[in-house]
Length: 227
Image (cartoon, rainbow, N blue to C red; front, side, top):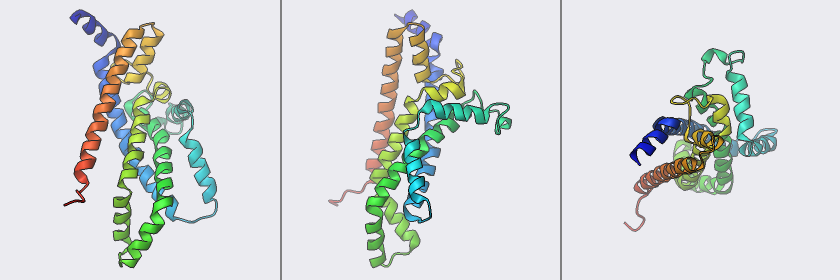
């Protein structure tokens, strides 16, 4: 049994695929969340011609096929592309860039939808209490923190489960850019279905662990209303 596991872990590079998956999903979710939250709140508060069109475009991007975003990112980052000098093709940085393009519209759209429903009443309450602009912004973020949390978790779920975009941009290079999802795809292509299922279980356990950890920190930051 030990030899079987050693052979399996060495064949697909499980340890490195876990490392790549965690690094990629962490940075892509962090960057996309910061951009998405900011853009979602700005989009809700700002009035400008064509705003409805921008909202529709963002909602379209929320459901855009990841493989299309991956192909676009690859074309931008390839040697002859406009950002070829960065040399991010077949690197984790390039995969993060593709993931940011995928996740940002999701977080932005969810935050915008929440803000449209709740922000006006929160701002009205803040005005009656004499709050300034910065105090109002802090109150808005505090009142929407649960919704923002779910938007970030949704973005993370999209990041950790992505296959097409990271395959195109990262190249699925063993011990370098192979993620757990692309490793599963590789195993499936080789007919190693049981090994693919085993790796899928590991992926689900990792996702559950990260979700549990995030929920723990969120509850710690939530004051007990009964105190």
